[in-house]
Length: 103
Image (cartoon, rainbow, N blue to C red; front, side, top):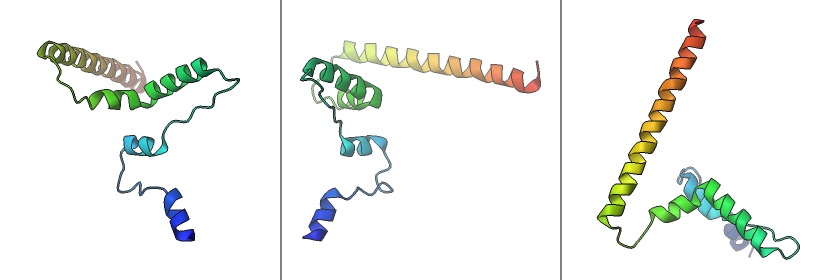
């Protein structure tokens, strides 16, 4: 009896599943509803899902067909996001180098 009880609540082996999404999926999302305010609880849950990346993970596992035009738009947005990130990293690196060198 005790062994089955401990196996239900035992934590999964994190060394084997090092991905944070697996751990988040194991944890789940829990929202407390105060004063029977369901709308506020739903907005809070949506905010948590967006910040933790669960929403992105769900969108990435789409099982329906994506049109080629949508694929092009998504690819263009992804490229713009990557270029913007690289540009920001380059600017930050140059600022840090100047500070280290004393300019």
